[in-house]
Image 1 (cartoon, rainbow, N blue to C red):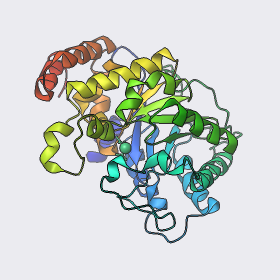
Image 2 (image 1 turned 90 degrees about the horizontal axis):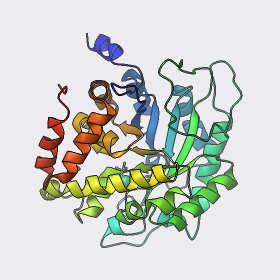
Image 3 (image 1 turned 135 degrees about the horizontal axis):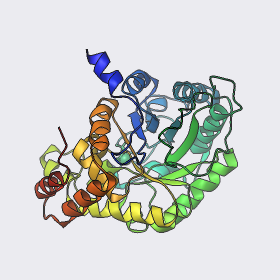
Image 4 (image 1 turned 180 degrees about the horizontal axis):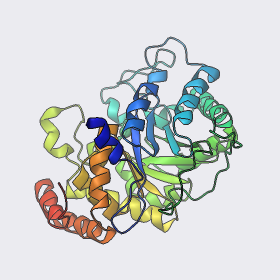
Length: 345
Ligand code: PEP
Ligand code: MG
């Protein structure tokens, strides 16, 4: 029965009035592929790549990494696979790249910052990704294309058939981008590696505030609400006692999301959300109302989010988002949003 329910709930993400909102999976390695496929993910919106690096004495080789990336690409022919480059830091230390001990690892040398002065490990990762993309299998031997159509998230026509004959499209994004300069540097490094689609995560508040200049440097933005909430409220993700401040329904967080999505739209770039906020069906509708063009989440959340979107129009999502932003607290925001989304379970 569970399988039947899952199968029924497959299909692309689309609002009641026909706007496509690709629904993608957050995965932490090839072991998560089966669940993503079973829950009907249209691709991967966040492949966390730390598993390749942690607990090792030597950096993984280019070929070894490429095999893993190829396996993920092969699972989503015709879909998208967004790979986040290594997001290590003092809390996730690398055996082969010793970092100084830091009193505040979340505020330290993590994500893209680690590589601005010595890009070696990151350059190898990009080389591995480019190698995997060149060899990504397609069901019908379609030529692999790194220079796939520029427009990401272009709303697929509802009646357009899935394209299992094409390989997955690889997109690469950097964590902890905090400026246009970071974004431009990453885009150039990707281009050097032969990767055509490079994006920036928006998870540092400064990146949301200045999202326009970041969006202009890259091909897409992806909002990481987990870290964006942590940094916006100066509330450590690991500290359970601060859970109230880590609530993505906080109107201040919704404002930051709106700021980033508006800036991306102004620059003509898609802007997805890949933090856990996207896994809440009510908040997912609000995120679409704020301008998110795709949503990525842990696979088990996909069916409920798919159902919530299918029952509401973009106009309703926008009204819910506006009401939530007028609220004075997370709890009020949620209640206000629900009033505009009558067809939730
Ligand atoms: C985020 O910060 O929201 C995110 C998606 O990345 P992670 O949870 O891996 O930091
Ligand atoms: Mg993050």
